[in-house]
Length: 339
Length: 259
Image (cartoon, rainbow over all chains, first blue to last red; front, side, top):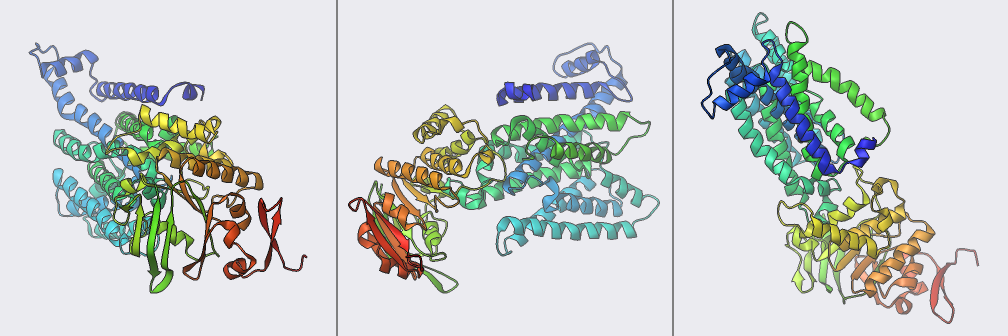
């Protein structure tokens, strides 16, 4: 705590940036096929300058086609889920909000299950999950426009309702899926994994997330004002309804991109923003970048464990729950405010 | 900065809340609104602040019609000071006041040195600089009210709308907040506030609007219009108005069998 009080938020953000870069670099090294720093440096520079390869062909393939895309996808997914979680908590004025509050995960799960049922694989599954995730949050939003009373409550309730309809539909798909190959594929997808990441998914997620993350970063100060409620925000010069639409849209977009690539990875979007709150406080000016950075370090780190701890890979969604849930218990019982 | 309301009428689901209300507040006046619960004081505020726009009539601040102004433009004309409240998240007092500067921040900008200076000046003006680094959630109700006033000052709007600024405050804090309001009005702020205490109106306000049954029943200097008849019309209770210290002060004494 003394360190916490001695540094300015700016220094903390800088420290987190360094930490995230270190985690990325470290994650490049470890794996079933270990790579050395020198090899990685060589492979990277050979893309720009001509360097005589002192590394094996295999090392280059592992790094460029498997290791780097996976680690970087993990960064993006972690960053997106954390930023979305922080954003939702702000606009819903609720510290317990997480990225799947509007049913983004339920929608993605349904989309992926549907695609797997029809024998699709690879990018088709991702595209289908992405589409249904957006459809789910979009439907929740449209219904909330017709609810009476407080708009936020209406939005949360319609998110729960639409989400549970999609979850029920997913169960139905599991029921009719072929138990020898389709059902396991669906079940594994639902547990979450970054194993499917490749260069294509990395490029897809980078573009979609850039579109969503940039406004969230730029509008972070306005989220502070939104946490005070619609009327106060309006009187302070922020059109709450419009601003919330923009922020919920961006957060839903990046959540959809994240869960469609990685499957259901729970807890990250709830726990990481709270870690960031402990570190830099509730001012979104620092909270948003801190959440993004911690998320971008946290998920590759957990994925390192997921792919290296046992001889077979552990689904990352299982691990984040095992790490996230106890950590959250610590947060809510430790000294100081939850929010 | 003047606030002008002309022929304002508002109804909700065919039920009239405000009916043909007109008043003009010149710069630097501290004006109180008296009226029973549910008489439409909050509705009037919401119309002035642009939170409700489906009203008939015309509201102008400094000759600018406010009805369809965007939030940011309106916020640089009029500031709203809610009752001291709790927030979903804990912010430092400094950040809370800094949020007032949002009204004049363009686009994607975040507050910088200039806004920091404005915030410190606002805190200084209300003598609460010592609260700067405290948590908003951990200060008293009276301190919160002063912080919210400071936030309105940081907003640099000249019309201040205050919703029962002394509600939930103890006796001392009520008087401290009212004193600050008087001080700000003397500095040129145009302040409109709602209250349930005629005594406070006698002590500090330049003017009072008495609202009853959708209309303004009386409008003028407190000593001239607050009478036992008016109090009976507004609240349905009998009081005697006592004059003290050669009529420097007046106060209401309830007549429910005590005297």
